Length: 112
Figure 1 (cartoon, rainbow, N blue to C red):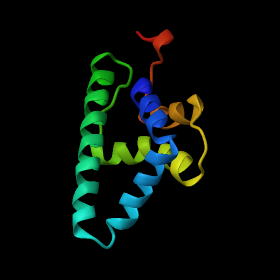
Figure 2: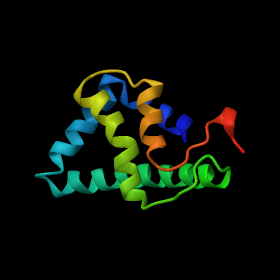
Figure 3: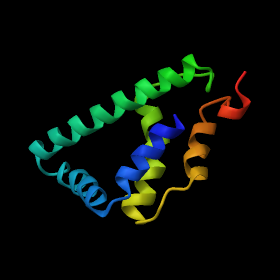
């Protein structure tokens, strides 16, 4: 889970990707074609997260599995806010915090 979110944070940290992300979000409010493109991007992101979550549950890194739409907001929201809106970098702590909110999280060194 952590590595997938770290990878996403790296992708979003580039000014070009952050700019496209913000443009998609803004443009989707007014243009149905842009909204459709945003939908495709969100669908791909949700699928990626769903796979990562299923693997985390299977490997007993986390003990719960919730609605993927809620989880994407919980997990990706802080990353987008930090990279696209604050133009900052994403620390490991910023990634760990939302993961910890999912339930009992077992880090690699403490797995059962």
